[in-house]
Structures are given as C-alpha cells and as structure tokens.
Image (cartoon, rainbow, N blue to C red; front, side, top):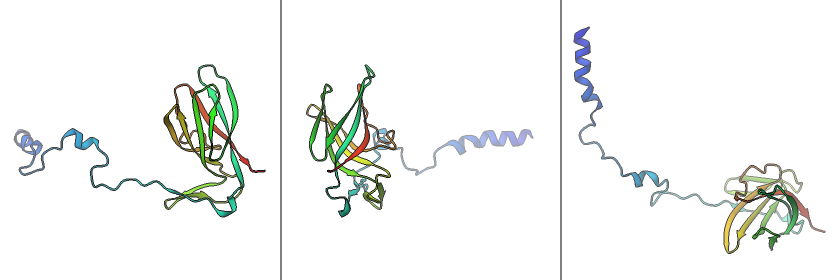
Length: 162
C-alpha cells in the first residue's frame, strides 16, 4: 500500500506538467475576441415582405412608459417616417411590419396576412445617436426589448391602412 502511494506521489508532478512541445498559452486578448480575423461573421437576415402585404399596414401603435414617474401613454408611428416621442427626446422610425413574423433560412417574413404574431422592425434615436435597432413583438414584448434607463417602449399593435 505504501509503495502504491509513493509511486502516485512521485508520478503526480509528471502528470500535471505540460507535455514537451505543447502549444504555448494564447494571450488573454486573443481569447476574448469571439470573432478573430478571417472567421465567418454573422450576417443579417433578409427581410422579405410578401406581395399580399403591400399597402396593408400604415404603421404601429406603441406604449411608452416613463420608468421614473410610471406614467404610460400610447402613440402611433407611421411606416417609413420618423416619429418623435413627445417629452422623451426619443425618435422612433418604423422600418418594416410583419403581421405573422417568421424567421428561417436567413429570411424574415410573414407566414400569413393575419396578425397572429405581429412584429415591427424599428430604430430608436436619442438626439443624433441611434440607441436601438431591432424587432419588437406585441405578443412577446420581453424578446429583444428596447433598453433605456428612463423609458420603456413596447409594440401594442399594427395599424391597418385605410
């Protein structure tokens, strides 16, 4: 028994020592970069608006909450136009609306003309600085939420044309 323990104690440093000829450790900055030069970069999915949707939606209705006061109001924003949000210093621009959001194969589109999963692609600017660009979902407001220290903005509904 003592011989087995002595053998283990003597071989332990050999087991823990790095092997000769092994690669040197990479510097910390190399390990922190998840996309080193030459690595494939994530591409943005293509938004495809089905022909049946053309002219069907004129914009969106959003809910705006002042986190400091708790006051909430709703506002409409037209598709393709800048919509200043009163009293906030924020401006919202609606880029695309999809009544039944679907994503797959590098394409974002609508599965149907029915508002089964309403979504809007928006940009939010504070002054001259863009502070958000992404999709908002009325059924899933927690998915990709607008993050701001003072204001919360959520998609309420799509606004039909006419």
